[in-house]
Length: 126
Image (cartoon, rainbow, N blue to C red):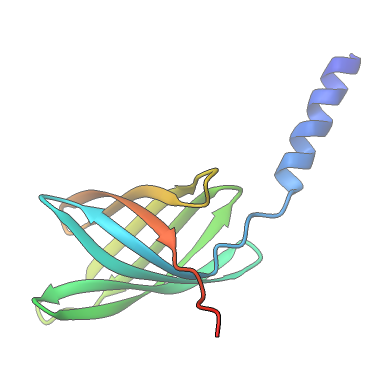
């Protein structure tokens, strides 16, 4: 009985623990036929996330797609819609914060399922 209560207490404590703060600009690498570098900018309020991802649309041109989602523990889920000339394109991002501070996961959009990794850009000291 004591072990059960102890396990329940630890589980409740972990669920109540605040998520890490992942606010900032992340250098994201989408892995397709080659690595596609892009910016993932996030703002966090509690477990709620908002931000943008820079989606390449033509050589040298990107569109910032607004994102909304949440961070639960170390797991993040984001989604957004890119309004294109032909039809809206939904972007679904899932991922996990790793022990070393980086993130990795999957981005699904328009029939593509890409893995990704990301590292937070460090602020420059002035």
